[in-house]
Length: 447
Image (tube, rainbow, N blue to C red; front, side):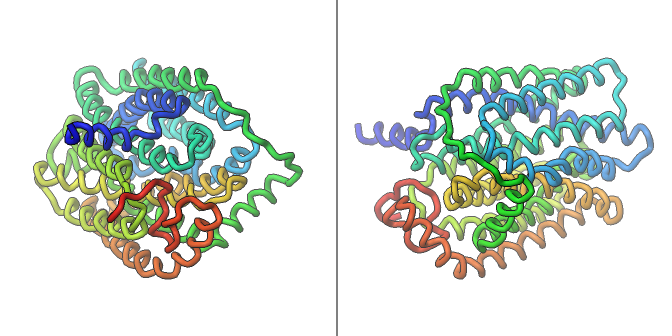
């Protein structure tokens, strides 16, 4: 009987954030919406790759340019949108952003299905989605604390957020590969548009307690300056943001160049691309489950360093592979390592940041993760045009390994700075030795 109760208990522990009604609604709606998002992501990449080849343009460069257009608004506007996320109703912001994203997907579907789409239109619509994302992601990150009433479940909610995002990657790319093969890219965008209805209905159905809003007289620019000074003036926050930014600049380029690997390196087609992205999603999903199942708060700082190092090694090995059988498991490792590193950094930041600056700090996290990615996409596209996609990923892997070494060395200096925050918040009596004690969940004896 004990052996039967233990798996049930473990599963309940891994899903403990779902006991909060609002988060349950959000989780269910987001899973449906994110599957649609991954349909659209793969369809967009393959559409650009196919159109660039047909027009005699460099596929590597065009993939990088379209990725740049879709993500540069996050880099430019997210720090300022974070100011308003701290001041406005985050629940309302999310309803608006999800509705606008739905309309953007329907517009893209209409253009593709009517066979009137051009690369210029793809650039413009990706830029519009990037602008929407610059509001949506910081609001979603900050809104997590409003859905989770028990702060002890916050780290689990962050891990489950990653699990649903990357769980959708298991389904979306594989389905998209077959939809594109059978019907074309347009139906992927159409399904993505309808998928937003799930999360919109979930948000409307929530019962959100009014958040205490302070009367703000501070000018937005001054508030932005205050947030930047707070984040970059505190070494642990600054170090984590820089770590995520380096990963985004280098490792995210593998997603941008994946159509090149699928077609030119591995000799495949759109279904091959679906398998590659699905393998990366499988690893990311496994990484999310690992974080959700952690019973000990010990060693999270070291986990970030090890994950970044493993990511770099896997990128180098993947860049040299010409076999699908070898590339797929390497992408599992890449997906696992990336989500463990980034989600762990997210957990640390969410835990140590002051509540009145949460929106601004999470907007900087969004800029570091998603906003820096367009620079990486553009850089990867340019470098790959010059030296090839495999050599580009080899360089990215070397940079990740170097970043892991620097972060591991700095851990000793970060721990004493973290310790007083946890002592003041009283998160856990055991949390008294720094960055490796960052997840606000109960520890198991002997972990």
